[in-house]
Image (cartoon, rainbow, N blue to C red):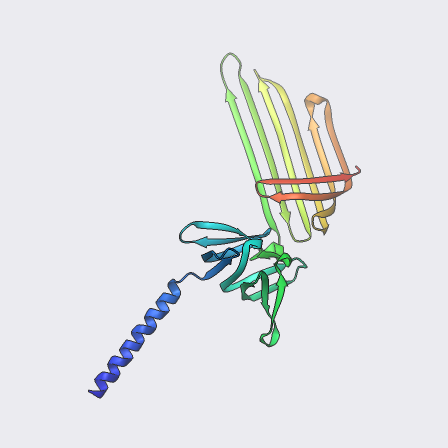
Length: 247
C-alpha cells in the first residue's frame, strides 16, 4: 500500500508539473502595461521611431507609442540599439516607469530614458554588419498593329546597397519608340553614386552620370562631381533626400 501511495503521488506530481509547464508555454510571452492601465499580451517583435510592434492573438499586429507605455516585460532575449550606438544583447526587453531597465555586471540594474532607445531587434546592417540591398527593375514592351504600327520599349533599374556608414546607388533607364518602322525616341541615362554618412542623416558623396538622346541631338553627355546631401526621409514606400554640389 505504501508503494502504491508513493507511485500515485509521483504520478500526480508529474501530471501537475506537466500541466504547469504546458500552461507556461501557452501563456503569452510579453506584457505591455499602458499609462491608462490597459494590458496587452503578445510577442514584441521590435521597436523603431518611437513605436513598439507587438503580435497579439486577439488583434493581430499592434503598434504602440513608447510614450504611452508605463511598463513592458519581455520573455525572450532582444537586441537593443541606443541612440549613441551602444548595443545591448542577451537580455529581455524590460521597461519600468517609462525607463529602460538594463542589467549590468554583478546583477545590478541601470535605468535609461526611453528617449535614448533607438531600435529593438535592428537589422544586421543597422548594427554595422554588412549591407542592406534594395532595388527594383521595370521592363515594358508594347507592340501595336493597325493603321499605325508602333513599338515601344521602356526599361529601368534602380538599386542601392546601404550599410551603417555608406551607400552605393546604381540607376539606369531608357526608352526606344518606333512608329511605322521609324524611331521617335531613343535615349538612355546611367548614374552611379557613392554616399558616406557623416552624422546620419547628413552625408557627402560623389557621382558619375552618362546619358544619350539621339532625338535631342545629344551624342553623349557625362559628368563627375562631389556633393553634400541630407536624407530627410527613407522608408520603403517613400524616400526623400536633397543634395548640393558641383560637377
